[in-house]
Length: 581
Image (cartoon, rainbow, N blue to C red):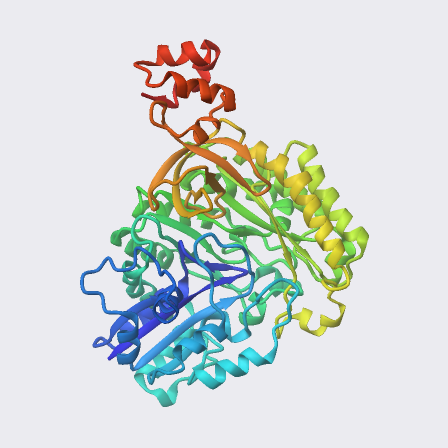
């Protein structure tokens, strides 16, 4: 039996599966098939493989590492089962991978004869852009192309289907006791991931459902409580076992991110704000480190700022645990969405502006210290959504003033994520969709997005990574229009623009020399003064165009003393450690 798993990449409120991230769905599907059918030959393909095959676009350069790896078309022609995984619920901007839509993959797969299964969050549709409403058209298209559309857990359906197709229920959900074997058996598919082994970061699930939603309901726009009606915490030993399997295969980058709030892992229900469990989180991360001692990245993702603000003592312990066992550059994403209390109440949002401020302050107190990779150890991120019901012009101004207060008070926020709301079927917002403000407030949204980027993001970025900061292990990913774009591996890594072409898929230590609104400019160090281009020499601190011309006229230098006699002895302390001859 030949099976093709096609990863169309996923991005949802509590999970990410866009390269370099490998999400949970392909791994679970692979493990399920392996357990149900030991005779199955399973191939993992990405949407980029299909694009390269059927549209002639450049595919993933690192794909064919395995000798005699069969071609995509041949796999699909021979596959008796084709599993497509996709779904884009929280659209963002991606550096080197673009998630697929149902329309795109349907066009590719329609000619092939194998049984076709659609899984992951795609059954609810995918967001093409902010402010959209998911229509029934693409869902009907999925039903016309795929033999089975899975509304529950893909792995539960696949196991039942492979044992007895008549017993397969597309609405069935599994529990964590059933998942354990699938997750461990599925770990080995990471070998087929394009970025394996050096650049893949694996998303690890610890919880499903939203603890806040169980108390007072979920946020109006969120799909997480629509899919998962209860909260279930994954056992610590199961998480550790999966990490151990992946680590044994060579994975060194992990994000414990597939959850709505890391501070609520194994928390005690308590209405709107569950009571954190620092002991459980300490045990979880200590266990991960015990089986992955030389991990290079160990990060997290979401947190509810209301939990941190209302339980500061317990949350401080948790933050210290994340620093103790984790790695620097870690970011905890806070879902503020709007600082307007009226909007927050109408949309049942996670936290107030006051609670979010206190949570930001707490994380800054414990996590602002800079780590060995050049980034602070643990900082908050802020999620903002524009277009929610109840918004007025004053709402946007209140959110801007909240962010300005963080800046004015000397606090650091790693990133501010601004999205326009997307309306998904089944969410409370679906029933309020006529009150969504994206069209009416289009100019306001554009104005305040610009205002935040220029007046908040830029000075905040200069605070987080000042000029002269050295970021270590920046992976070069894409070259475009004279710039190489790279980033560290982690939760929300900064994009670094390098003003020259350098070999891709290598790690560099980069000196930060300038700032954009959401990205930074850096140069790889050490800099070879006798060989480097004039363009890059200009970026050296204290050099500029005139001094760069002077350097060119005097090259080659025999030693550093000759160099500093030309540029000035006052530059020695600044440049002595970052140049070479």
